[in-house]
Image 1 (cartoon, rainbow, N blue to C red):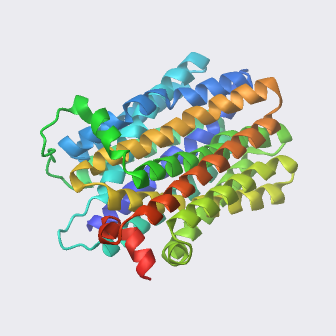
Image 2: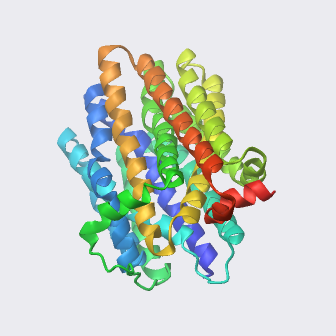
Length: 408
């Protein structure tokens, strides 16, 4: 099978599997008799270990190659999701911890595959185009997953949806082992052991563009998590059916899919810093405004689509910026850093939601967390803008994407 088709298949399988499950966890805890605070704990438990270990896993991808790591992650996803058939809150917590580690390993591997050039003759422009194409197929999985999960839950309850997750995760494991390319192991020139991965990551973060990219990735995943994990709880409380919730979430993912083909011309028009600012503010505002009328299905559908379209630009942009700023031998480490930021967002978001919802209301929590996401997005955009102003002309080539935008 052609390499591009393999990456497309793996991206679709992974994101369909991942995006179908997370919207179901909060409502599953509620169906077991749990509270919103317990739903917050379950959602946050998914991200605890990945937040701590993402950088180390990224270094493993650099040293040992991505194929085995991707396969191992898919197997963990199968094991963790099997526990969801046990109708107990403790089983949900354990399952989320295991699934969190599995999805961490799988997504770091896929990002490394996407950003690492497979041909020495590949130009930066060709690589960025390939990253945008990969993100396009990722968006397909993000579009299909929520609607599939909602439909299956409506058809046969949570158990049927969890069973489908197991099947898809098994398919991901089989495709990863049988189809993913075998990469040569990459050893850092310094020969540093894996335990130095956190030191290496700190060195990379001294690059302002890398730090800004990590913050932007954190912000985009915070917004994504608001839509995928907490919007279902809000809409459930407002009386919408599960299939309507699934369709609303998929509308956001489909809109994100539509953003990929126009990624390059919009980036050329706005530049990285303005794109980050516009994307984060628009996405945060749209998803936060759902609290105005959460029981209005058409209104919710529209706001979800607007937010999804805006966030759809974030993934290819942050991947391309990382690929431009980080040495090839450390792209796995960079993927781990990016994933750590994403997992941190999925840890911070439920914690903030749970705290504010307990002290006030769920609607207030949407306003608070949405405001935090918009603020961090603006901080990232400001850092990128200052980075662009301080780059000397002879050093502008260190960022192919920035150079391309300026020249055009």
